[in-house]
Length: 254
Image (cartoon, rainbow, N blue to C red; front, side):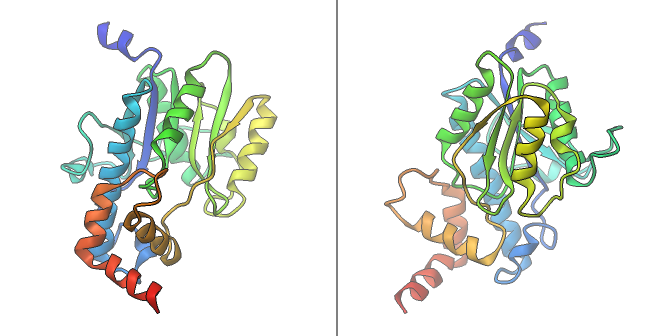
């Protein structure tokens, strides 16, 4: 009973993630990366994202979670997550409405699982934005924990979203969405209007899912002037170990 009471009022943030494995992680970054480099970068992203959530939890009442798939891969996350991060299977296998398909099933499964744990709000977060400002996570959680029904959306610059939070498991938010297209954010806004819910939007941010975004990440983590971003120390170390920051500097100098 004490554990359940402690969860009341908490906002769960579930990172939609796969375990870092060569040939299975960040494959859209190959090339320019080799499969083993992409896996190492994926592991660094997981460390930084969960540490970022942990930093946000020192300001707002947040529980960090890895919402993973497929089943059976739990031990592959060992050593890659911030202390206190929980694991939650989100493979989309439970019964769901017919119009929730593809990746939407995994997202809804994650949200359902977080609410089943007794959290007051549930958010899904991408695993591709290691420099996301901590303030955005805090702002999203605080908006969801305030009185009243609402949806919080963090739009990605490519037309998807990096953050989606709610106070109930609204399946309609995941219905009839063309996943992995630039229409995801617009469709999510429309679903929110259909539900008659207030929409709170966070500032846009970027996903690291192609070579151009990787170049931007390298520049951001190599800069001392980008004060807004989360400093992503594990990602910075991984980039340095691969020598990617040196290549980036050489290209900028040409």
